[in-house]
Length: 284
Image (tube, rainbow, N blue to C red; front, side, top):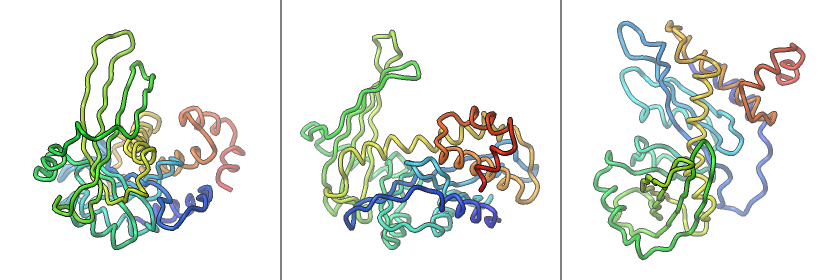
């Protein structure tokens, strides 16, 4: 099932820019893991095909994707997907579903690290993080952005946590407070999220943590591109490995355009489609 994706992902990996030489133990890259349902691929006798992908935050390249067993969920697909990658000094971000003890142990054994959002599916851990003395902890990173019709302010705090926090290898707790308001409005809305990581103080530079938390949304942008530019949710291919293959091909196209420096994938696809030699240049 994963043979095509494995081959194409390996081909893309050979084109990734070389990672800068860094001191031992520092973070080499940040990989986001997230799932997407191919909504048009719903079978009469079961749910729609669900796919789990690993995505390099810096380059925008999809490093691998696998189909989730229809009788299970993303949790069981996490390790098989990441088994393909060298996780040494790699920081893995994921949503709250993957804030899972087994996943933490898996990454620790593979030499990787985690930074995961904690929500109500881990009620005890969420309560422990929320009740830390955040008012006494200084902000380590603050960013203000203006775009997409809104103004946004983000503040990040970090604090060490004791072994009694009850999550494997956890060393630091993270609080991210986000405030937004539409441009032209005076009314702000806000939310506070909590996360946990096994990074040490030395590894968890403020800018790295802030970028990793925010950068996780880029995989959601990939899902949006697949739906809008490639019409994935409209596809009704349901037979055999068809849905997985038809998700792997757009992943490959998006990733290759990203490596070529494209910022707008729809425009890059139109430019390439105007002459076959442009596609050949990307593939050779």
